[in-house]
Length: 103
Image (cartoon, rainbow, N blue to C red; front, side, top):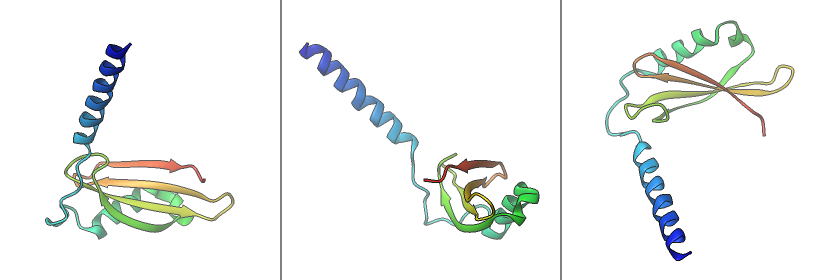
């Protein structure tokens, strides 16, 4: 029984260390590879006609999709049922969009 607990503890610790190495904070000492206005223009064009329904609440640099960093925009709509959208623009121009459930 002690061996099983020890092995499980080692596996959990190893998994935690492995996962932690994938999350690297953005190096704020270097400027972003894509200027904020350019990234915002990409995000707005990706939203398309929905830009009339959403307004931008925040913009920040994250490393959710890659260690090189990307701009993450939070959009919010109060039309009909309120909802959030996260639009992430990687510095290479790739765009990710995610609907966020209201809590």
